[in-house]
Length: 147
Image 1: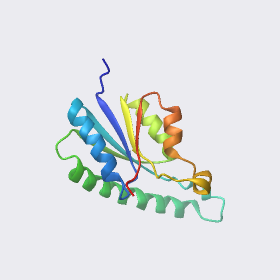
Image 2: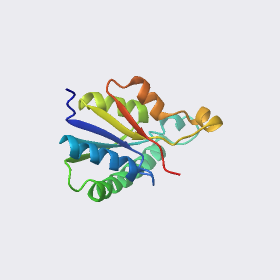
Image 3: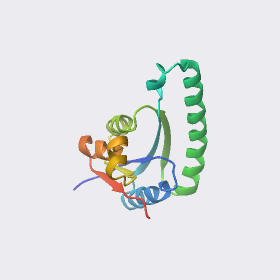
Image 4: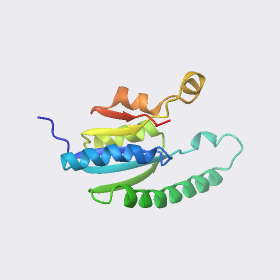
């Protein structure tokens, strides 16, 4: 029988995140599992060559991370009050960070939202969820936003 001890819940801290959290919490309660919530802030390192001083980019990313840390703490208190949960905020490329953390914590499942992009938006922005689904070594539950 499959045993899931750790759930990785990848969040973008948008208005759709509470729905993703509901699925992670329900699974954690049913399975007695721990939830690790992850938010990935963009590194913005690709903009260093655009006449933007690296220190400005680092300061901006630092502010994003500090704000995300605070938002994550509040989010966890509101949505995961009665399950074992840990929050992490990192910088980098979302799909890579999600996959890397899933391996390190030996996640039994990844739960994440999708933006439901179509057409040119999907071509331009890609799909973090699609990359994770294709590359993850564990099952991935994707949650589409409610319209």
